[in-house]
Amino acid sequence: MPIPIEHVPAIAQGAWTRLRGELVRILGDNLIAIWAYGGTAALGEDATSFGDLDTLVVVRGPVDERTARAIEEAQTTISDATGVEWDSWYVLEADARRPEMPRHAWRDRLSESWAIDRAHWLAGRYALLAGTEPAAVVPPPTQDELWLALRAEVEHLERHVDAGDTDPFEATYAFLNGSRIVRAIETGDVVISKREAGPWGLEHLDDRWHPMLEAALRAYEGRATDEDGELLAGQMAPFVAMVRERIDTGH
Image 1 (cartoon, rainbow, N blue to C red):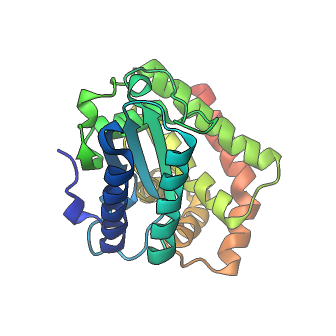
Image 2: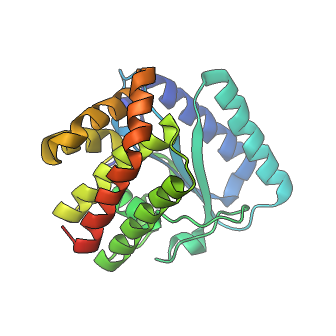
């Protein structure tokens, strides 16, 4: 069963509801579905601290430049009014029905997390804002697709390490998403949020990583100290190396 929109954090609920209204107005019959998902959608209505608003919008046909601009302006207006940040993806219906990574409807970008996102949606980790349910649109991911997606996520973390991108935001993402990747390797289950992956890592990963995971959870909730940022940045590379070793050895 999907998450009732009434059960997501109040500020996020208001922003998503406003976006739904704007998209219905702008897209009209070209709108197929809107799904709210990610860690924020699963937090509960009383949560006051959360991350980006992950949103998947399925459209029937191409989106022209004028329509795209209107959508982006609507998102910016809502963001300015509520303080939320969007992580939105717009995809053509024909592309959403295929297992291959789809391109954004008007940007030159590929959805590299497509297989993992489908697993989350088909497990009920979404709130239906409008239109069609995921099960009627996206195909179930295969284990091979999920494994390739996990490897791509490890490579993403490694690119940031190689480039020296160890700021608190990237380091926090590396620790929480890295924990999520390791859990998926060990259990075969990719359906877990970054926020949930932190406590899992505290329970299952080596004690040496616990101070960094605790710091990452504080950072994710907006409570990090300067010392937390320094700790995360300093230990990001060895943690990512551990995740690489786990996925290369399959355990």
